[in-house]
Length: 146
Ligand SMILES: [Cu+2]
Image (cartoon, rainbow, N blue to C red; front, side):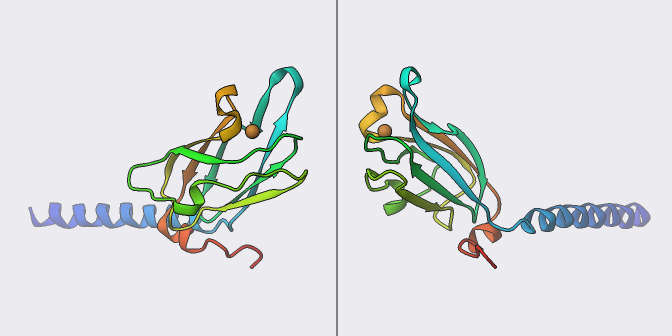
């Protein structure tokens, strides 16, 4: 009985260490900057390109105006408990090449985020952002360039 308990403790410890290694490996990725273009593709319509993006806490999503019509970003759904406040809606981007940087900081949690362009929501201009990562990743938000 005593041996079984000790063996179980060893197995548990090894399993724990294994998880720890995996977590550290994930943390080692430096924050990245992703780009999502707001485009007008003739007959294919108004769109975010890419429409789906998977990013990690601590990363930055740079939305870029690549069309001629005004576009913006407004989050319509997000994981429970997330309060984006001013990060929940961008200003209207009008000038070609204008950008809005969205930092995936502590306001964000892992999960699925759905957003639209308000003027073109009815035309299907929308995107999905999958956020992954840990609290440690979000606390390193803004470490870009280090
Ligand atoms: Cu738009």
